[in-house]
View 1 (cartoon, one colour):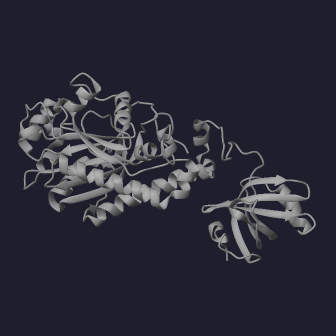
View 2: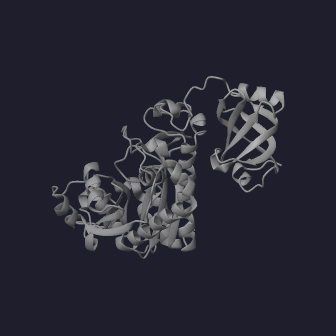
View 3: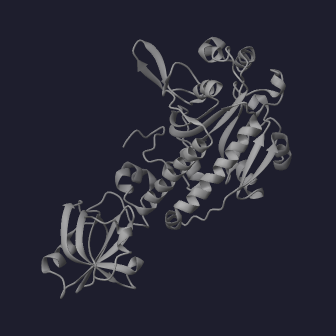
Length: 425
């Protein structure tokens, strides 16, 4: 039976094993040949001595191309020089699939292939331990998010990915052919999670969303995954506290469960602190013009002032927030809102706040934003039959992965990115 490489380091000297994986590296020193074999759990050295190894095995070790898939049967040996302190002396090698000799991209640990070409061959780029480490950590992030809120009694929902009109107003949408009707790919689960929270009180989801802005930056994708919550009887401060707690939990889980991956990526983490500031306080702190949004440079400056801290910026001007964010005191003419942003490690990771649950106020705010309430009739009507105060937020899974691991480009944190120019693989 096949053993995973990680298990082999618990085996005793001369114990017989069988292991399968990819040829990660190879070296020929004349009378000694080495293969480094890799599977999802790690790497191990296969060592063949010309005088002590079957001739056919010694010969095939020189001919197997990198990234070929093989199985090795042999005995475990202690070795101070081998990675991890153990190696395998091969007695039988079986080839499952030979790779072509010339790889289209460099998949070594120190690959210098540019990102665009690596993404063209993403299926091969995923052979690299560094890339695997990113997505192992991303899996922990999503799992921790889900576990945290399920333990808190949140209901996991699956909102629709096809909608009839804009969820957030101004954002461009991707149209889709839907029988005889006009439809679009969903830009947010916003309206649906609100509907659920107004009946089942606490909702959470991890769901794909699509945004058709024609941007091309290192922090945006046109398709991404969002981690969202919505909860009844909550204002902006209650939902900010939920965000603080889950981020701290996620970071602690990554630190606990992904030590090896963090080492591979050379990333050191600590559970962040939290700092709460009003928009007005941030304007004074950063010496920016009142009524302006924060630029990426401002976010980086906040990180310098508050390193290893989630900075919550609350009570934003109504003019800078979407139509569904509650204005202060439920006043449509209020200058300030019940909306917030959260910045971490120099980048915005979330925005949210208290929602408008009063139909008449929602209609006024839609008109104020230049939107037609008729296009949001079913959404507005959902609050006419007993809707409580409620609030929520979203965190982009890829954005959070990028921020946490200090990646230069969000595409590094997406398995198969979709941006303005990329639809394959």
